[in-house]
Image (cartoon, rainbow, N blue to C red; front, side, top):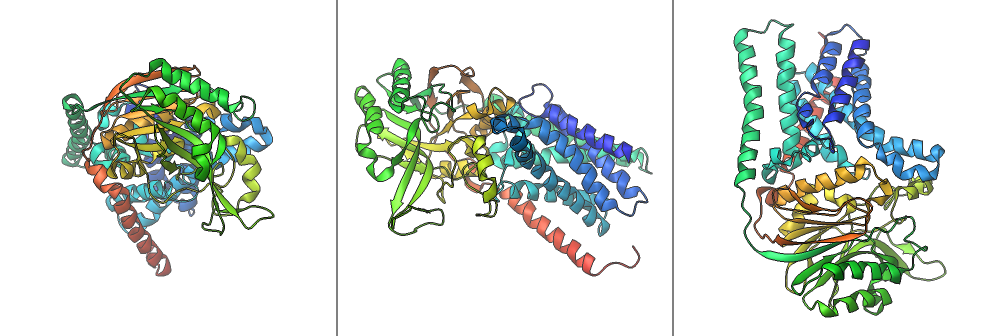
Length: 539
């Protein structure tokens, strides 16, 4: 029992050491799950009468260590609420992922009871990918720890994400870990020399072939020249001071001054961060809003320029048009609130995109009103608190020139397929606007930046990232960070990026891998249920 716990903890530590933003240790991803698999095997081969419970508890412990050490910054972002509130709320993201991971391992054990080890290990990969896909689609979504994200620092290794997305990385990691596990267990089993040689050849090929393909693509990838001049602004306004302490007009002055410091005649986009306009705006009256007009006035000298900026907006209705609409007390009216990206240009045209991958608790209470008692605690996570509305489809924000940008607001940048759908709709580059200041100077901001590199590879689009307090950056189509700012400085950067209209395989077909794995996992669970209902008397 103690040995298995130590093996589980070792897995957790190895995965943490491999995780972004740590450099030079990514290779630990390929061995980090081996101790966990050995611990599971030890339990399966034991005489315990509670093998399922032991597997669940043992694996949960290791995954909890990995998750907690990797996303410790969640606590950092809510500690202003006080320790009494911050600790239990932090345990939700710390624990929820590990619970799902441990469930995948438990399902592997149950599936193996009715098959064999090799088929069971294939089932394990499917169960794991099904958990990852669930964790990016349900109301408590938090796909931050998807295994394929682990290559965000060594993006040169996974240029084939343009075909598979991050789930290809998940399969790669599991494949090598499983092969190494089989080699290790063979030393204590009656494994033939030929079988061991086959496994060694398989694990060598599984590592070298994808890596070689990726490095070949990386060093031979050439962008088609189609330049567009972009300015990214980092105003560095304390997120806890921007609402009320600093006048909105003064914040916009800062944004326009920084934009003007680098703007040139041919600048086509000025990108400002999430909620850069720190006042709630009625979308139907935006063209007469003073802060909108202040920003638009700045564009007088940039006739072809378009601002993409974050803002909080609302729409008003005379009937409850949506499930998220809030009634206005004492009236027959309703309104929806949005975390918005919008365009400002030298015309009356205004385009809106409403953030749709909403942070559970912060921007949308999961599962309706059932968790409403947590709302006071969630407000400390950052951003504006409330039940936001979104939109069903990703958007594209077009400039006067016809150039399309994929608007990605903060947390949305870890959804590969969501961004890909925007690109499929016509976006020629990706504009990420975010406010990472809530997390303070922790690895959270670095992970968030690193993950953006994967979106560039999946879509073969430049990423222009505007972060209120940093880190802002330009990322090319290979995933290289070409320019980046420092943390907590007021600055702006500009870059001639190359637009792209070609569609990658991943952009066309999205998350086909986890969808297929989820289907197979459901079939596997059906077999498990049938076996539970009709137990084998010989077992």
